[in-house]
Length: 110
Length: 115
Image 1 (cartoon, each protein chain N blue to C red):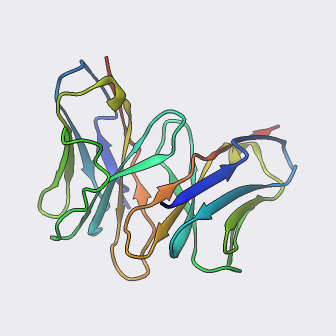
Image 2: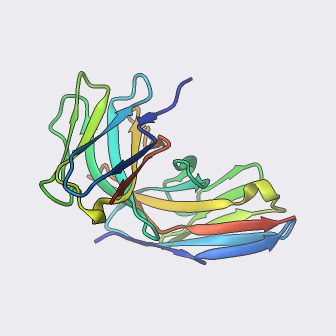
């Protein structure tokens, strides 16, 4: 069974304090790994798709990386508006659904 | 352009009643998904539609849950004889369904409360 584990569950950072969120996965044939951002009371907002180990993608203060066992979401010099829950999900070959982790709740303190 | 829309945004119902939740996907998207998000748990896949193909119902938790998609666009998720454990946020997502188009775009969700 596909499994996705995110850590930490919650993270509080000072504004400007860089850090990383972790997503570990155990799947049979990774087709893609996805990062989403979810604000309270809203649906997940797509951020990145990663397909192969060594791949990296960047968007503003966020950079996502992928290895054969895990993905990291690096946040550089975060701002209060980066506060949200960040969700990781995987899709495997022959499967259309996404399997999600339980997320990391990120709080950036001004 | 317009994103995925869902209605109602909130629904409170009594245990044992039936409810219908609606999803309007992004125009032109052929793939449509339903997920459920319970407090403290990750999003849980329910059902997937792709064009005119038979839906993948493997995630539906019981036979009280059903969904249909009319005309390849709007979808309705129906929960019969609701139970308190059905309380959750129900999220709909759509995808263009083409090659290299893995991203799923989510709607705002319907928060269902069963009293």
